[in-house]
Image 1 (cartoon, rainbow, N blue to C red):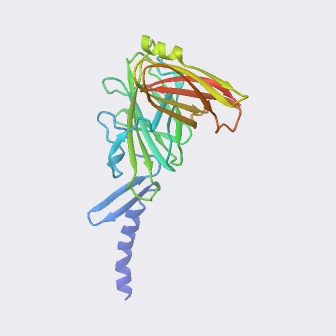
Image 2: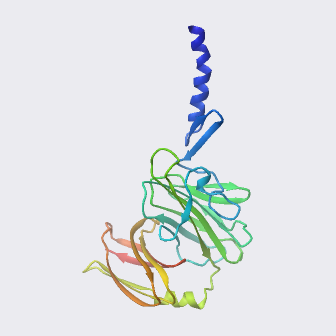
Image 3: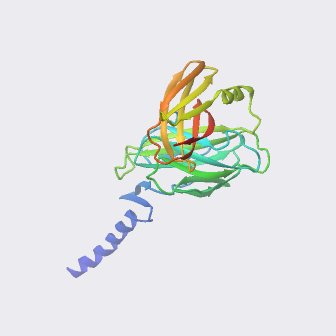
Length: 281
């Protein structure tokens, strides 16, 4: 009897190691090895959907979907960049209790551009000379961090990102994976962007607690307005859907502002974003 117990101990040890083989990885064990891996924090590098990268479906079941209307990318002071300047970036979504992301920024030749400084609930990883910023906490709807633009002109850059909105069922099944990319041009925007930027005006009426929003569209466009605090946290979200070309005026009731202060109001017109800082109280 004692001999049988002794023989079982190494087997139990192997099974225990295969199930909890690292503090932030949980795996299931089959005869042919590890079947699935869930990354609650700090996912592996190279999962953004950028050229040459994989994405979250390398570890999670399901298929990828477009991030449009679900995930929002904002460059504070952007959308363009000046070489050597530092910009706050936020990536946010509108739902989910356990979410994750990974993002990188590349030039037209797929070279990494600039450098990241991690913010709250984010961390940095490097793979084959490319830096990635990713979630280090999953109970978030928005992440913010700093990006320092390259010291010299690298032309138009592209931010590639993958976001996993988890169903929090304790396994890799049933998650929703969203892929997106946004261009970050060198400052010196085109005529069209200047027209859109000039038309974007916003005024907060503290007596009625309403935002008065004005903007113009040059073609049919998907329009979204985000209210974020200065850390990049998403406070309120308005989806106007697809609208035809023309001039628009909206009166919006603000319901989620709990603290008086300055907020960033980001107007998304298709893949372009225009930012304003507004005092809300």
